[in-house]
Image (cartoon, rainbow, N blue to C red):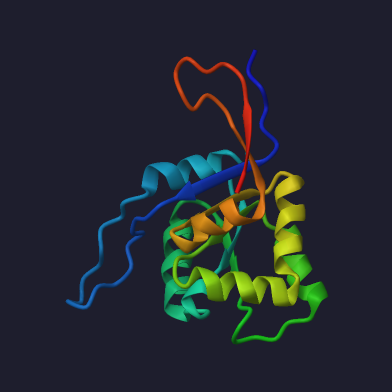
Length: 168
C-alpha cells in the first residue's frame, strides 16, 4: 500500500538552473529532473511557485533566472523579497499561503534564518509545510528545511519498509 505524503521537502545540495555566467553565456541546467519531480508533487499542471531569495540578499537577478526557468516548466512564479521590501505580515502570509511550491535560493544561510525569525517567516513556512506545500531549494535553500522542521523519510534504504522521523 502506497502512503500519500502530506509533508514534502526536496532538499537540493547544489546545482545550477541556467543563470548567466561571467563569459556572457549561461551555466548548464543541472537540477531539471528533481525540479520536475518537485512540480509533480503538487499534483497541479501549473502550480504557483514562490521564490524566497533572502540568502542571496534579495537578488533580483536570481529571481529573473528562477522566473525564466520555472515558467518554462509550467509554474506561475512570484517572489518574496524580505530585505529590500518591507512588507506587512499579512502580505507575507498571503504570498506564502497561496504558494503550491516554495523554492528557497542559495546564499548566506545564517543571514536568511535570522531574517526569517525576525519577521516571523519561519513560523509561516512551518504552517505552509504542515498544510502540504512542497518545500524545496538549493544549498542554503535546502539547509533551511533541515533546521526548521521534522522530516519523515520514506524508504531511505532498499530494505527499509517503514517511515522514520528525524529532527533537523
